[in-house]
Amino acid sequence: MLSRVADQIMWMSRYIERAANTARFLEVSYHLNLDLQQGGHEQWSPLVEITGDMKIFEARYGEPTAENVMHFLMFNPEYINSIQSCLSAARDNAKGLRESMPAELFEAINDLGKLVPEAARKKDFFHSQILDLCRRVKRECMMISGMFSEIIERGRGYHFWRLGEFMERADKTSRLLHVKYFYIHPQLTDLETSIDDMQWLALLLSLDAREAYHRTHGLIKRDNVIHMIVLNPAFPRAILFCLQSALQSLNLITGHVQGEPHKKLSALCQQLESMSGASIIETGLNEFIEDLQLNMNNINSSIFDHFNPDPTLSTGA
Image 1 (cartoon, rainbow, N blue to C red):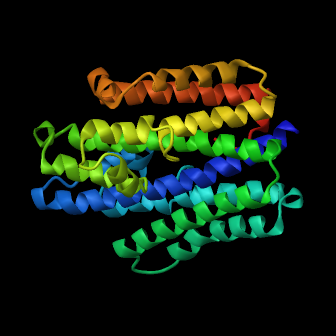
Image 2: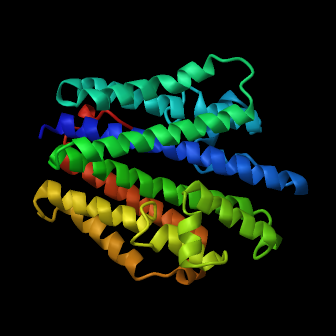
């Protein structure tokens, strides 16, 4: 497969997954802040902080109010990681692959790329409409992922899609966990209280993991929640599940030839397999997340270097 085509497939997948997860960020933060308002603890800056783009936000918006943060992450066409920008980029990549893509899949991605700009043209776009748009983005992204699994043959193209999707999902699940860290960090007195439980529950809801968690663990407990969303090898949005799935697709792309990306990804999977929710807390949640994100960034760079030796050909960021 040409590196350009593989690159377009991976980035199309990553942009769609990134848009869906940003919608999750907005949704969970909105619900968290509804509860935090009562105690005067409403916070929107953590949602920008975890993107690493606070300077970009402050230059354009100033104060991290609910309206400013929502607009920045949902509608801003100049911000490369806004939902609108991600869906537009996915649409552009799909256009480059149109001749080799099933018509119904292209149409679904093309229509999704129009969804947010059309909503942005409406006046008086209230919070409830933002939440509805987040749900629509999540639903349409899941539908596209399902279509890809149903109608694409299990060749290299399929596995490049899955590799991009699972690496992106692992990264964004770790960032959702970072949202929780930033919310509790200023108020350590809330640890192991009803507020703490409410925040962990909101995190599970943002990953559609509440029912699966209660079936497996019952009552909300910090260590069990961390195990569910980081270390569970059977839950599709857990970080370990995503990395193991990415490794499986990488093996099938390379014919099980163990290059540098394989070695790094395999080592990270083995590290997580040896951990528990309690050991992550003992290490320090923030330190664990930062180290994990650094490892995943290194793996992503290694993947792109391995399959696309000319970085000027990359269609993503």
